[in-house]
Length: 164
Image 1: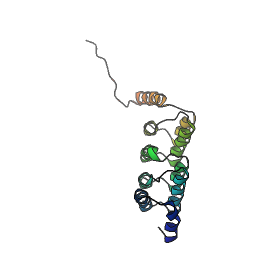
Image 2: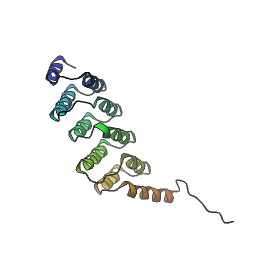
Image 3: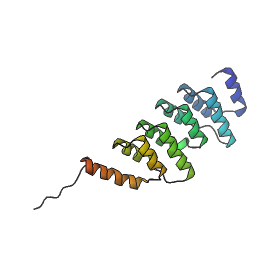
Image 4: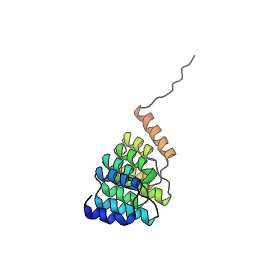
C-alpha cells in the first residue's frame, strides 16, 4: 500500500487479523481504495474487517473487483463468498452471481449455485439461467428440469426392469 493510504487506515486501529486480511486481499490484486472502503464499511457496522481471504479467493478465480465491491455493499461476502466462488468456477458470469445475491438480499426464492452450475452443464445459456433466477425457480424445480433433460438426451443412469 502507498504510504498515504496506510495513513488513511491509522484511525481505524486495525487488529493484526485485519492487517493480515488486508495484505491477503492486496496481494491478490485488490486496490488500496477498495481495501480502505471495505474497512470503512466494516467500521460503520461496528465490525472488524474479516473478508480478506474471501476476497483473495474470488479475485484468484477471476471475479472482478467491481463484483466483489457490489457483493460487499450488499453484505454478501462473508459466508456466502464460497458459493459465489463455486458459481464462478463453474463458468457462471459475475452478472449471474450478482443476480443471485440480489435475490438473497431481498429474501426471495433463488436457485443455489450448485443447481445453476448443473443447469449450465446441461446446456442452459446465461440468458436462460437469468430468466430462471428472475422467475424464482427453486432447486426442486431445477432438479425436475435436469431429470427431464437427462431422460430426453439419454444421459444419466436409468434403472431397467427385466422380466423373469
